[in-house]
Length: 135
Image (tube, one colour):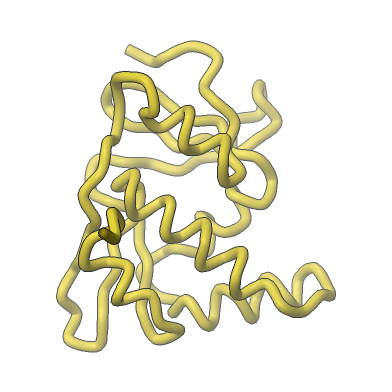
Protein backbone atom coordinates (compact mmCIF):
# COMPACT_ATOMS: atom_id res chain seq x y z
CA UNK A 1 0.00 0.00 0.00
CA UNK A 2 1.24 3.50 -0.82
CA UNK A 3 1.05 5.50 2.40
CA UNK A 4 1.57 8.78 0.56
CA UNK A 5 -2.04 8.59 -0.65
CA UNK A 6 -3.27 10.50 -3.69
CA UNK A 7 -0.48 13.07 -3.57
CA UNK A 8 2.16 10.56 -4.67
CA UNK A 9 0.35 10.11 -7.96
CA UNK A 10 0.43 13.90 -8.43
CA UNK A 11 4.24 14.08 -8.17
CA UNK A 12 4.87 15.15 -11.72
CA UNK A 13 7.08 18.01 -12.91
CA UNK A 14 3.96 20.10 -13.66
CA UNK A 15 2.62 19.93 -10.07
CA UNK A 16 2.89 23.15 -8.06
CA UNK A 17 3.89 22.74 -4.39
CA UNK A 18 3.02 25.25 -1.68
CA UNK A 19 3.21 25.31 2.09
CA UNK A 20 0.13 23.88 3.77
CA UNK A 21 -2.20 26.30 5.57
CA UNK A 22 -1.13 27.10 9.11
CA UNK A 23 2.60 26.65 8.42
CA UNK A 24 5.24 29.29 8.00
CA UNK A 25 8.77 28.98 6.68
CA UNK A 26 11.32 31.50 7.86
CA UNK A 27 15.03 32.03 8.28
CA UNK A 28 15.98 31.85 11.95
CA UNK A 29 19.28 33.68 12.55
CA UNK A 30 19.72 32.19 16.02
CA UNK A 31 19.55 28.68 14.49
CA UNK A 32 21.42 29.72 11.33
CA UNK A 33 18.81 27.73 9.41
CA UNK A 34 15.36 27.80 7.90
CA UNK A 35 12.66 26.62 10.26
CA UNK A 36 9.17 25.41 9.53
CA UNK A 37 6.77 26.76 12.13
CA UNK A 38 3.44 25.12 12.92
CA UNK A 39 0.99 25.71 15.78
CA UNK A 40 2.48 23.09 18.10
CA UNK A 41 6.15 23.64 17.39
CA UNK A 42 8.83 23.87 14.77
CA UNK A 43 11.19 21.83 12.65
CA UNK A 44 14.73 23.04 12.02
CA UNK A 45 15.60 22.27 8.40
CA UNK A 46 19.00 21.47 7.03
CA UNK A 47 20.29 23.47 4.07
CA UNK A 48 18.90 21.21 1.35
CA UNK A 49 15.43 21.02 2.87
CA UNK A 50 15.35 24.79 3.35
CA UNK A 51 16.43 25.45 -0.24
CA UNK A 52 13.67 23.18 -1.53
CA UNK A 53 10.89 24.57 0.69
CA UNK A 54 11.81 28.20 -0.05
CA UNK A 55 11.01 27.45 -3.69
CA UNK A 56 7.71 25.68 -2.89
CA UNK A 57 5.81 28.95 -3.05
CA UNK A 58 2.72 28.01 -5.06
CA UNK A 59 4.11 29.70 -8.19
CA UNK A 60 6.84 27.32 -9.33
CA UNK A 61 6.26 23.82 -10.66
CA UNK A 62 8.28 20.93 -9.29
CA UNK A 63 10.18 20.91 -12.57
CA UNK A 64 11.05 24.58 -12.10
CA UNK A 65 12.13 23.94 -8.50
CA UNK A 66 14.48 21.19 -9.69
CA UNK A 67 15.85 23.36 -12.53
CA UNK A 68 16.47 26.31 -10.17
CA UNK A 69 18.29 24.13 -7.67
CA UNK A 70 20.41 22.53 -10.36
CA UNK A 71 21.33 25.97 -11.70
CA UNK A 72 21.96 27.48 -8.25
CA UNK A 73 24.27 24.65 -7.23
CA UNK A 74 25.80 23.92 -10.65
CA UNK A 75 24.77 20.28 -10.63
CA UNK A 76 22.40 17.93 -12.43
CA UNK A 77 20.23 14.98 -11.51
CA UNK A 78 18.46 16.44 -8.47
CA UNK A 79 14.93 15.42 -9.49
CA UNK A 80 14.95 12.17 -7.52
CA UNK A 81 16.15 13.87 -4.33
CA UNK A 82 13.78 16.82 -4.65
CA UNK A 83 10.79 14.60 -5.42
CA UNK A 84 11.75 12.34 -2.49
CA UNK A 85 11.80 15.27 -0.09
CA UNK A 86 8.52 16.63 -1.48
CA UNK A 87 6.92 13.22 -0.99
CA UNK A 88 8.03 13.25 2.65
CA UNK A 89 6.76 16.82 3.08
CA UNK A 90 3.39 15.78 1.65
CA UNK A 91 3.14 12.85 4.09
CA UNK A 92 3.96 15.23 6.93
CA UNK A 93 1.36 17.69 5.61
CA UNK A 94 3.95 20.41 5.28
CA UNK A 95 3.12 20.88 1.60
CA UNK A 96 0.12 20.76 -0.68
CA UNK A 97 0.18 20.25 -4.42
CA UNK A 98 -1.82 22.07 -6.99
CA UNK A 99 -2.29 20.25 -10.25
CA UNK A 100 -3.28 21.62 -13.64
CA UNK A 101 -6.86 21.92 -12.40
CA UNK A 102 -5.60 23.98 -9.42
CA UNK A 103 -7.09 21.41 -7.05
CA UNK A 104 -5.05 21.30 -3.86
CA UNK A 105 -4.02 17.84 -2.75
CA UNK A 106 -2.41 16.83 0.51
CA UNK A 107 -1.43 13.42 1.70
CA UNK A 108 -2.50 11.90 4.99
CA UNK A 109 0.12 11.74 7.69
CA UNK A 110 1.13 13.10 11.06
CA UNK A 111 1.94 16.73 11.55
CA UNK A 112 2.99 16.62 15.19
CA UNK A 113 2.97 14.48 18.23
CA UNK A 114 3.99 10.92 18.90
CA UNK A 115 7.06 8.93 17.96
CA UNK A 116 7.56 8.95 14.25
CA UNK A 117 6.09 12.47 14.10
CA UNK A 118 7.64 15.30 12.13
CA UNK A 119 11.04 15.25 13.80
CA UNK A 120 11.70 11.54 13.21
CA UNK A 121 10.49 11.59 9.63
CA UNK A 122 12.12 14.92 8.91
CA UNK A 123 15.54 13.68 9.95
CA UNK A 124 15.23 10.93 7.37
CA UNK A 125 14.95 13.47 4.54
CA UNK A 126 16.94 16.51 5.52
CA UNK A 127 15.37 18.27 8.44
CA UNK A 128 16.79 18.37 11.89
CA UNK A 129 14.49 17.92 14.87
CA UNK A 130 13.42 21.01 16.70
CA UNK A 131 15.45 21.46 19.83
CA UNK A 132 12.50 22.84 21.72
CA UNK A 133 8.83 22.94 20.76
CA UNK A 134 7.36 26.39 20.38
CA UNK A 135 4.19 26.91 22.36
